Structures are given as C-alpha cells and as structure tokens.
Length: 217
Image 1 (cartoon, rainbow, N blue to C red):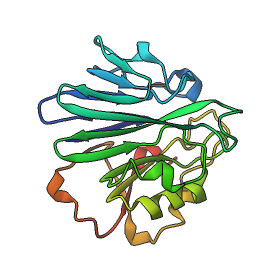
Image 2 (image 1 turned 180 degrees about the horizontal axis):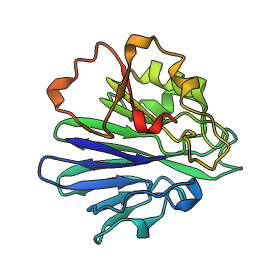
Image 3 (image 1 turned 135 degrees about the vertical axis):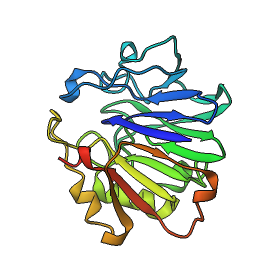
C-alpha cells in the first residue's frame, strides 16, 4: 500500500489494486493549496473547511463522514466518534477517528482529536501499524498529549500531522516540539511525501517517526 501526505491532515491511501481514499481534504484557509487528486472515497473527520473541502478531490468519491463500518474497493474502513476538544465537544463539536485496513496494513487517522488518551478511545483502534496523529495543539491535542497516544498505542510508524509549516496560517505549533520527545534514532526525515509499506515491514518492536522534509518548515 502507498500513503501520500498532501499536507495538514490530508493523506491519500492507495492499495495494490489502485483503490484510494483521501482523508480530510483542506481548503485555502490552511495557507497553501492541497494537490487536486482523484480518489474513490473521502474520509472527513469533521465539518470544518480544513477537513471537508470535498470539491478539492477529483472523480466521484463516496463521502464517509459518520461513524460506522464501510468498504471502499476492498479497503476496510471503520470510524469512531470522539471529541474535538477536552470538554466533551462543547467548544468544537465531535471528531471522527478512522481505522483503515488495506493490503494487510492497519492505518489509524486520528482526525482533529482534542481529548486526552483513554483506554476507551484506543482499545477499538489497536493494533495499529501506521498512526496519523495531530501534534500542533490549539485546535487539537498538543505534542505531549500526542506522545501519550503513541506510547499507549505502540504503532510501528507515526506520521505527525496538523502542525505549522512555513505557509500554514493557523496559530499551531511546529512539529519540532513533538519530535523532541523521541530519541533521534527513532526519527526519519524522508525526501518524498509518498511512502510504500507491506504488512511484512512491521514487527511491533519499535516505533519510527516519519516526517517528509518538505513539511518541516
């Protein structure tokens, strides 16, 4: 399977048959444009413009924006309700966490999770091979709270998201605060924003943090 980070909280997941899902497509309010690509489905964690810019995705994608179980061209999708803030959704409403399974790889996208890590949240999600988690704070959990999710979920790979880059307009933190919480040998800076994984790549022994270099600004 392939995973391409499109910026902010948007990723395109593609399995070996070519079936694809784009998560949380964003509008220009982020501060830069998302690549306009095709997908069979869109998984939207909540109804804010930086996560539900559906017209930014080509084709005729199915929109998944509610809790439940779904199948997209052989890709299994489960979505779970959570809170967008630490006070039960009173500030920013609800958030969907997505768990995708494609080519035997489990990918968890935490959306704009805003509540602290609890057993009730993570038990339906684990085990996880690849964890996509916000780290920028302000509108989501911050670096320290994200680290607790990582420590308790023990994914093989973590790709941080929803943090400030050179062109990001939002008042959120850079990824550095999150990366400083890990040993340097656990962090990999990649020259590409598209990564390829097989189920055999994961052994459950160590977590690697992967950041595309173009999004380090």
